Length: 390
Image (cartoon, rainbow, N blue to C red; front, side, top):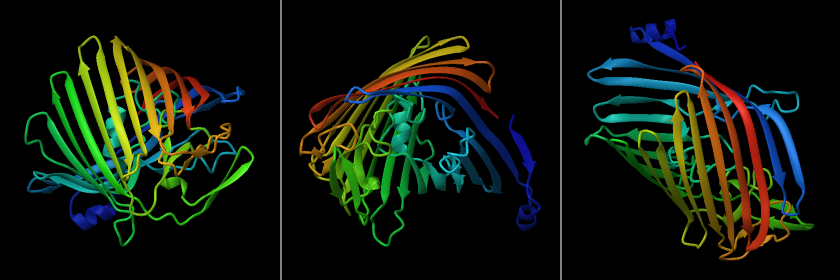
């Protein structure tokens, strides 16, 4: 249950008015089994407990203050948590600022805020996925064209036309130049059971100042770009190869323009809801790009909802990338070489109440080719969990 707190005395003293705050959160825990089969046929299975299978566990505070004349101040602080901690992973499970953290104003002009949130392209990919957002679960289209962004200025326009929503965003790279800056725009139209959403963004890449050495198949290869400036594949969960690396399709350098577009279409027929999504990420004026698509359905049966999604991805290298998965023997990514992957995900939820849900998930993904070489890198994840919101 949401709790309303009396404002701090300091706020009251400064503003001369009372304010309130809402505490909210989500706890998500699951029993998880993940199996991986390498290109060399080596299979490993890991069993664990944890979250991020049906959204992050999180704890937040949000509120607003009526400033008069139709103007309202808004704020929020949201922290993502990992409550399944052991002595070995306390550091990796440290909390971090999460979606919906910032401060802003809203009124007749719309709403504006500065803080940390998911960017417009990422959200477009999420609403196109019938199986919902679930971190890096196998088989899910993860929306490589963005993610959780800080230092972000967001603007939502008032609805000039019924059903039409418009938004824009600007991220600053923290430099005296345009390097690291991102701009994005979104248009969404809802009418009856139909929803159509389109978003686009352009990022000016920052300078790569760090040299990274990668050892692969007994050969040491030195690259002059950092992980943050690699355009990577695969974005389909669970098939990224080596931990936190994936396959570099392009080594983006200072002032490169990375352009991303995403579209989501859903239609609610009543007995079934259909989903479609497509996105493209393009690196500068090179051939390097990633194309993703997903289709799916969601069917309610009273308190039970069954959702299924199938996703595909194809990434094309511009010749500056590397195949970084540890079990792939081909290191170089020649111009025009591709990475292809596919996956599917079944997600079932059972609503025990408005705030408590049981869920089960089964996802599979495979990298079909890397650098033109068949790899058959496979991942599957099965989980059963419980999620409670308050």
